[in-house]
Image (cartoon, rainbow, N blue to C red):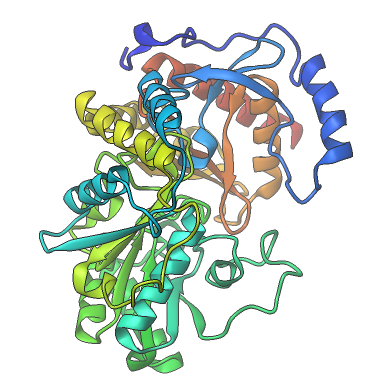
Amino acid sequence: MGGMSSSFSVSQERKLVTALPGPRSIALQERRVRAVSRGAGTLANIYMDHGAGAILVDVDGNQIIDLGCGIGVTTIGHAHPDVAAAAAMQAGKLTHTLFTVTPYENYVRVAEKLAEITPGDFVKHSILVNTGAEAVENAVKIARKYTGRRAIVSLDHAFHGRTNLTMAMTYRPWPERAGMGPFPGEIYSVPTSYPYQDGLSGEEAAEKTIDYIQTHIGASEIAAFFVEPIQGDGGIVIPAPGYFKRLSEFCTENGIVFVSDEIQAGIARTGAWYAIEHHGVVPDLVTTAKGIAGGFPLAAVTGRAEIMDAVQPGGIGGTFGGNPVSTAAALAVFDIIERDNLLDEAKRVEKALWARIGGWADTFDIVGDVRGKGAMFGVELVHPGTKKPFPEALAFVLKHATTNGVIVLDAGSWDSVLRIMPSVVISDALIDDAASVLEEAFTLFAASQK
């Protein structure tokens, strides 16, 4: 049936022994309300204890199918024993010195591997940091230093982070940006390619993007153009073929640094090391995070050596960036992906998802579009007979899924896209079971509308 279920410490099956959330989760939620800021909102108040593969086990003993992976982090599965062993061994030797004070080999080895797996056969250098937002922010600084320009461009429906700068690069105001300004200037959002909604070819959409840049910003003013090859939070939006190729050419022609933000789509999730590879485009810089270290905090900016080295020594860095334990975990992740052929496993998951849910738009009136690559799929929910977003339907489906033991994510600028991002080791049987729960939700919602 696919997957490697026999090797997991938790049986790869959905199993509910209490209602969800269970009594221990309810008790923990009461404690959480008293101690944790409400700003740290939660999709489902189900508290987890442990996990393996594509299954999470909550504090009440329920086994839950995870189609979210902590928003794309546990791509290789939960609590991978090889990652745990590598991190534990490193923690017993050295937890911190700060690479910019007294360096260590792990950091260098991760940078060497990133140079190998990122697109392009030119000389590449990296910097390691803690989070995706920090990677994006450093990429902005590096591009500005290299070009001597100030303007930064990102695409409509983009999500680049939650720092002040990266929130300015993020598309929609709610909930991340509301009341958080003022934001930095010289940040511009430009039209993108959204095939389901705009019906344009990649070349047509690219010309629209370029025209907007030329008439609203001016190409000579732009330091960097940031793109997500697959927009995760934006709704699993995959631009039409040819779109990124034309934009990359435009950037090269105008001395703009072309940055592929691979924080969510990179590190084997889409069946390639990096999702931009599916478009045949080689970016100048790549940002990596989420799946790189199996759950430990690590992120990177990797790119052309002449761009990365434009910054003076001491111009970029940070206390915990490239932490010894996180880098040890990342090296284990790289080994696991290659040893277990996880690029091929991502392709298997894609095939299984298409086979199981690819026909939903023909079966369910509220499903407008199903799209995806590897283990990264989106199901756009719409008012029947239209392309109008249907956020109420998404809210219903999410609630039904979580109370029935399936963790699945929301997405989309209009809160109307079901985001499916399982581990690449999820079995075909778990995909089938989770899809059945989601189908039940669609059917129940349709009945509730009559």
